[in-house]
Amino acid sequence: MNIAGANDASLAQTRTIRVQIPYHLRTLAQVDGELRLQVAPPVTLRAVLDAIELRYPMLRGTIRDHATGERRAFLRFFACEDDLSHQPLDMLLPEPVAVGKEPLLIIGAIAGG
Amino acid sequence: MSGVRVLVGTRKGAFILTADGTRRDWQVSGPFFAGWEIYHMKGSPLNPDRIYVSQTSGWFGQLVQRSDDGGKTWFQPGVPAAEAGPPAWPAKPANRFVYDDSAETGKPLTTHQWYDGTQHPWEFKRVWHFEPSLVDANTVYAGVEDAALFRSTDGGESWHELSALRGHGTGPQWQPGAGGMGLHTILLDPTNPDRIYIAISAAGAFRTDDGGQSWKPINRGLHSQYIPDPDAEVGHCVHHVAMHPSRPDVLFMQKHWDVMRSDDAGDNWREVSGNLPTDFGFAIDVHAHEPETLYVVPIKSDSEHFPLDGKLRVYRSRTGGDEWEPLEKGLPEKDCYVNVLRDAMAVDTLDDCGVYFGTTGGQVYASADAGDTWVPIVRDLPGVLSVEVQTLA
Image (tube, rainbow over all chains, first blue to last red; front, side, top):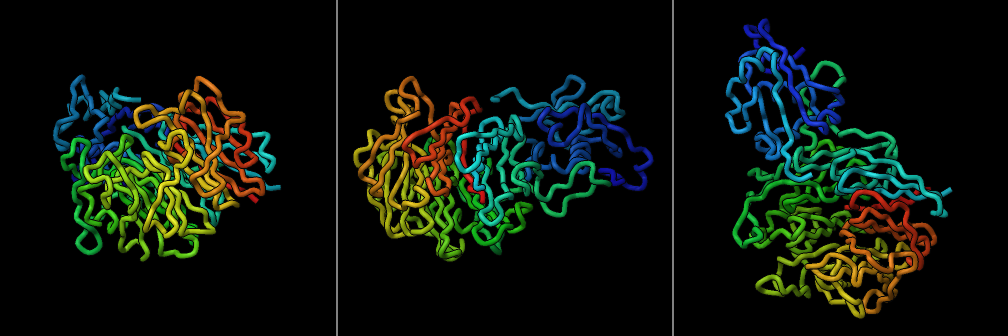
C-alpha cells in the first residue's frame, strides 16, 4: 500500500488518523462515518490531506482547490476544539489527532445552502 | 417507438424526465447528485446515451459526471473508484479546469472588470454549459465562470482551455452579470467544424472561424445603456443565443434587454423585439423544423425577474422576430412570479415539435404542439437551472 508521506524510516511508525468529512463528500467517496487513514509521521495537515486524496481520488479538488492547493473557502478545519483553518499546512496536528484518539474535523461553513 | 428524454439541472440535483413520442405520460427519475447544483447536463448528438453533467458546489468546487447508459449509472471521467484496489494518483487531473497561461499556448491571466468598476483577477468558479461535439463523441466543450472556454477530447477526463478567447485583449472590459461572469452559450456550426459561437455575460458574443485559435467580438448593432459607450465592441450582457442547425449564419439573441437577430453570422445585429410586452428575458430557442419560428419568455424587467402581471406566457414569432403572439394555454394565468433562466428552454425534433422550459419555481412545462398548449410535467422540483431535450429513436 502507498502511504502518504512515507519513507523507509517512517513506515514502521505509521499511524491511523481519523477524519470526519461533510455529508456530500462522504457520498462522493462512498463511505459511511469517519475516514481512517494511514499516515506516516510527521502528521501534518498536509500529510492528512494528501492521504485523503490518495485513498479517495474523487475528493481531489473538493477540499483543496485544484489550481492553488489552498483550502476551499467554505471549508474549515477543526481539531481538539481549535480552529486550524488558517494554520500553515505543514503545522503538526495536535497529538490526540496524530495518535488517532481525536478526529480531524473537516466542516462545511454554515454560509449559504 | 420514438421518445424524448428531458435532462433537468436544478439547484439541488439532476432529474431525467422521459416519455414516448406522444409525450403524454412522463416518468421522473432522480434526484441524481442530490443536494448539489446541477448547472447543466447535455447528451452527445453522436451517442445519446452519453450525458455530461456539471455538478458544482460553493463548498466543494466543480465535478464532472458522465453517463454512458442514458442516465442509469454515472461516473466521474478519469477518477478511479475508491475501492478500485491499491490507491494511486489518477493518470490525468480529472475535474480540473485551470486557465492556460503557459508561454507556449496560453495567454496571460489578465484581470476583468469587477462589479464596482475596478479590475479583478480571473478565478474559476464553475461550469455553466457543456456542449458535446457534433463530430466526435469524446470531444466536449465547457463554458465556465469566470468566462473561458475549455475543451476535452477524452470524454471529460481532462480539460484544456482555448485561451485565445480569454486572451482576446478585451478582458479588462468584461464584467460579471448578476449571476456571475459566465460563458453560457456555445453554438457549434454543423456545416463548419472550425466555426464556434460563444456568448458571455457580460462581455457579449464572440466567433471563431479557425477552431478556437482566434476570436472576434460580434456585437455590432447591440445597444446597452448600462455601459459607458452603449455601442461598445464588448461589454454587452448577452443572455442567450440560439441557432437553427439548417441555417447556422442566422442567430437569435435574448440580450439583457432586447431580442436581436443576425443574418450574417453575428457580424451585424438588428432588434426584433417588435410587439413583445417587455423584451427583457433570458431564454430563447428556435422551432426544430421552422427556422423562422422563435420562442422567448418575456420577464418584467432587470429589477423584477418574473413575468408581467404574474402571468406566465411564452411568446412565439413565426416571422423570425418583430411579430410575436402570446402562448398561454395551460400556463399560470395569475400569481406566478417565477423566472425562466437562460439555459432552461429546449425543443425536441419530433414531427410535432415539442417545446420545454423549466422555472425557478421548480416546474417543467412541455408543449407537444409547438407551443399552442402547455402542461406541467413536474411541478415541485428545486429551482430549475437548465433544460435539455433528447429525441430518441
